[in-house]
Image 1 (cartoon, rainbow, N blue to C red):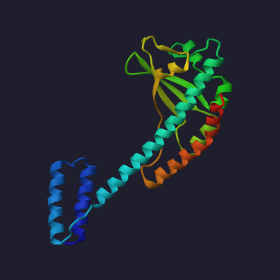
Image 2 (image 1 turned 90 degrees about the horizontal axis):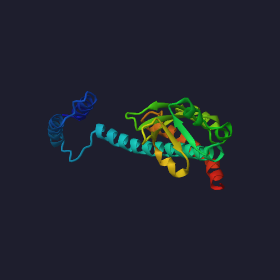
Image 3 (image 1 turned 135 degrees about the vertical axis):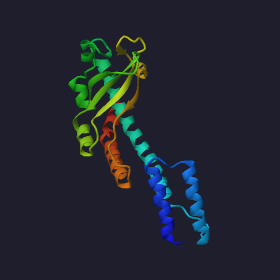
Image 4 (image 1 turned 120 degrees about the vertical axis):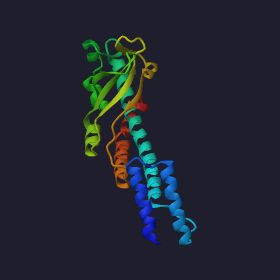
Length: 220
């Protein structure tokens, strides 16, 4: 027996995983066969390449998850700032959204806000129950250019809590922002070292781009 026998075990392990057939029984059988090979070759300890790759994939997913959370946090900040400014300057001191046209119109941010925050209301869609719906927003301006440069989606969504079930929600003060939750956005990158590295470059560039927004907000 040789290293080819060990590679064969590793290849079978990969095939079982890819086909969805990696069970406790199949894993045990491969482990028994591998144990015999290691005993004959007098190898005390060995980690198959499959498990090295799984460890690396786990680390990549953790890293990507932290980066994605950072992006979502930035988008939520921009959205909250946009809504707060909308409340301050709107006639009725309120940001409203709903399925009737008048509520949809009320949800649209003014050009002044969009130019400053680079976010605009886009559309609504129904949720799984009558007590919530999903609001879609679009990133605009210089921020959108950065997203497009790194091939990231310029749309994001957030759940709107409609506790009355009437199909419209009013946000009248910052404390009402709790009615908006679960912000989500599609992230586009390969789960590889180079893919996550590129996504990290995007997040770092976004951090720098939004620095002026944080400074401006601290002065308000």
